[in-house]
Structures are given as C-alpha cells and as structure tokens.
Length: 211
Ligand code: DGP
Ligand code: NA
Ligand code: NA
Image 1 (cartoon, protein in one colour):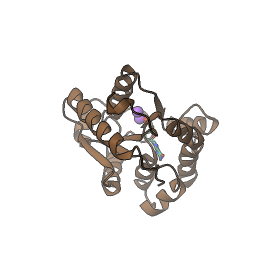
Image 2 (image 1 turned 45 degrees about the vertical axis):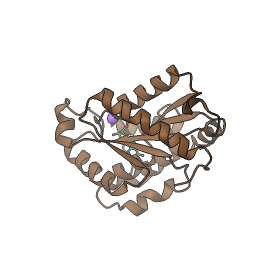
Image 3 (image 1 turned 90 degrees about the vertical axis):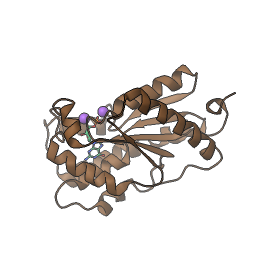
Image 4 (image 1 turned 120 degrees about the vertical axis):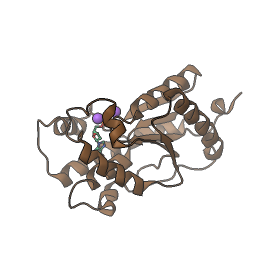
C-alpha cells in the first residue's frame, strides 16, 4: 500500500497563479493522475459559476453586469464559503480535495485594484479551511502573454495581471510550493506529485487549519 492509499483525513490542495500560467492544466493533470490510482478525489473550481452567487460572478467577469468592487469581492468570498460544508465533509471522509483557485486569488485580484489593501481583502476569507499546500504556477506576465492573447474576461489585461503577480508574491508562505511555470509540463506535474506524497505523510494526523 503506498502513501496515497492509506487511510486518514483528505488533503486540501489549492492551485494559484495568474491567468495563462498553466494552473488549470496542472490541476487537471493531478486530478486525472489521482483518479487513475483509484484515489478518492474531488476537483473544485473557484469561482464556482454554477451556484446563484456564482452566476452573478460569471456575468460580472464577462462584463454583462457591473458591480461595486467591494461588493464583488464579498461575492467571490461568499462563493468559497458556500462550499465549506462540502469541503469539510470531503476532507473528513478522506477525499483529496483539489481546488483550481481559492482565497489567494480573492486577495490578489482585488488588492490589485486601486484603493484596496491586502489586510482588508483577507478579512472575509478569515476562517475558511486553509489548504495544506498551495501550488503556485510562477510565470512572468511577458511569458504569459506569449502563450497567446489573454482572454476577453474582465481581469485579463497584462497591466492588471502584473499587479496580481506582485500581490501573490506578498502572500507566499511556507505552505506554498512555487513552481516555474515555464518548465516542461510533465516535469512540473512530477514535482507536484512528489510534493503531494510528502504532504500527505506530514498532514495525515494534523487537523485542518483555518485561514
Ligand atoms: P478562472 O475561472 O480561473 O479563469 O477565474 C476567473 C477570473 O476571476 C480570473 O481572472 C481570476 C478571477 N478571480 C478568481 N477568484 C477571484 C476572487 O476571489 N476575487 C476576484 N476579484 N477575482 C477572482
Ligand atoms: Na480566466
Ligand atoms: Na482557469
């Protein structure tokens, strides 16, 4: 029996990074790998655009509605809070919960706006379950742009993404694994796999922390 099949609580894992960093690709590769090993895994994406709060967020991101900056910040946070009962239940029954974006996106994307400080931005997310590990896909905005145009959504502009990257840098802690997003995607994937195995050993007997 390898480490990933032992019993215990599940791990809470978050992927973070600027748009076009390859974060969603790595998140999907990890989920596919874990499923292939027969592991109980849940793949969550934030914002979750399927809930009623998520639908408001979606129309904001697509530019079909305008929302005051503080108000949309709180909606993004609420969209995470509404997932907490499910996250806790999954973790308790031993599921690996892999999240594409989480509270750090919330802070980075709002604090990148004028008139917001990191401390205010963190407040609504205080008390959310804290990820055991955050995989941060690190890319320069120049390289991100070279991967093709940013998309059409609200925040997908180079100047804004640069500010987001700067805030992410301030948020890094020991729980973060910073990965060079320009490396071969399979190499990145293998590094994520081995970090996850180590983390599972370390976290199995420790309770989930809160942000
Ligand atoms: P994605 O579905 O990963 O492409 O994310 C949609 C966009 O929303 C992306 O530009 C990042 C941004 N975003 C994600 N979470 C938050 C959040 O909590 N607050 C804000 N302001 N933006 C967020
Ligand atoms: Na996006
Ligand atoms: Na994405």
